[in-house]
Length: 322
Image 1 (cartoon, rainbow, N blue to C red):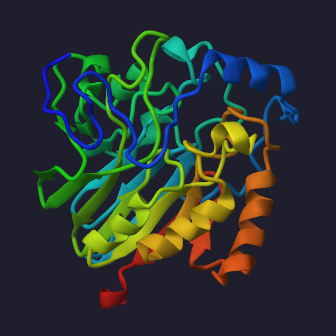
Image 2 (cartoon, one colour):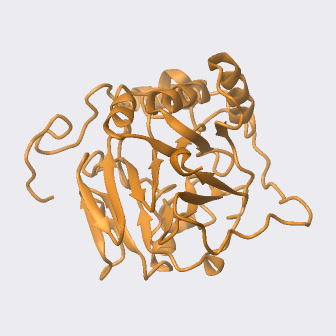
């Protein structure tokens, strides 16, 4: 691992979270395995009958973004000048080689071969449900923006930019900032927290986009909202949160996601990280029911924080250009 200066989230050997410890001991892992009350998911979810969702638009105007939900944390984002994909995972499983580990119950809403030309991949961390080299290899023309240390897991001869929290890079007209998240990293039992995790804020073509990656609820969300004049669209995780005694530091539940929407001051938010891979114990549709309850509790409208159907596209317009 390259030598890096110590900071408020790096001790010289491993990365850590300033506001919570996300590490779990083997004793806690065994306790979860022994006591978990896992709600069974269906083996597969059949897409609805025709007509299918209309395809994403081939262009949008400045001040607009077309956001298409492909599945889990994978979105297609089109602005006036660029196309982005977040955490592209198109494999059948969220594990090594895309063939082991949790099995996908819904196919990707858009096949890799049907994607438009992608300019930038936003890669938040190295967990298997967010980083699959075979999926990245198919996006060979895209530049990859990720976090410190993650480049070692990526296909060779790729254009990769590794960022620390609050560092920026520019690709075309887009200014991309890596922002804090409260999570952890690992690909094997021996490399825990040797690479960083993050979210991204993208400012391009008159819109500001926030992709949270994986995160627990943290004071850093309010800091993200304070550092940017506005956030037009936030992509926030709402799934993989039970049991709370185990998952709370690293995964928000829907109530916390609504609070994150308010903390960041997002104009519009879209839920993600649900209904694709069974990673934790809640039912497949419980995040949607819990999100509906949380919106009522916090006075947030369904239009302000919504969930897209798999394959659905929404056009979000920055308020200043609406």
